[in-house]
Image 1 (cartoon, rainbow, N blue to C red):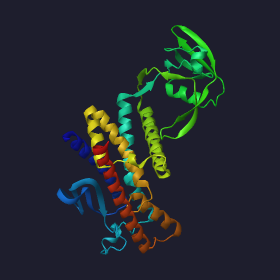
Image 2: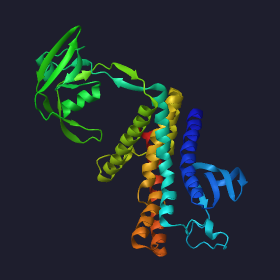
Image 3: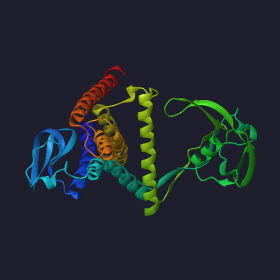
Image 4: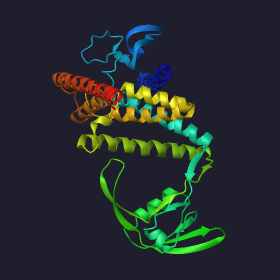
Length: 355
């Protein structure tokens, strides 16, 4: 339990700090005054005021906030405060300030992946055949366990992922495989067969296979700074894409809402990763940071995405959205957020007591 709580505080602290730091730095870049920079909500535990900014650590570690001068459109400002006012800045600058929060969460993930790739390299699964289905086309063609594939359809194959993709994309057309068996080079012509299976989201899909499994042989490929940088962006993009698809599938009903988790689930998972080592916990932070970014970009009032939605409308119609409309939307957003929090807490408790 102690490990879970400590890991939870560390994970949330890092995520919240980077998120709010994005808002803060972009606000200061455009000359917006920041009154408060808080990690956590509720009563102030301790802090320090520098200039006009009160930097504080608050009691409830489930979020944070940056309070800017003139953040509310109806705020009363002195003439001296108007140049520092968020509301009085061009809409393009306000969009960038709001987007910087989730943007910095994506940046955090990129930095973590960059560090991992630069120090540990990238683990590659070799295209070495493991178990072979005796009823599948590969076995019938003569492929056996331990064979090492290096060319398919005259294209060099360097890892299992490339091999699987070529087979899957074959659409049932014959493929020509070159492989090594000991010192011997062998050639095979195989017609992949179509099967019905489930994808990552539990949906039925048709795909093509030849009936082989990976032997699980891996090696660490060392990456230079440039390669690590590119791979960190690619990894962040792939996880972001998967996260967005997951959100869409939840709304479509393909993925059960029971998969949603809240603070208790995060604490449990953080504790488990911490026990596995600092590397696992850091990787977990990157995954959560991407999820937090995607969540905040959703066009739901109260979240950053909701503010961005209204600012984009303002940019199109050349005037702020009616205050009454925004107030109603904010109320709806708060209600939806409370419902979501209650639901994920219910899910967390159900997993503990009824799973």
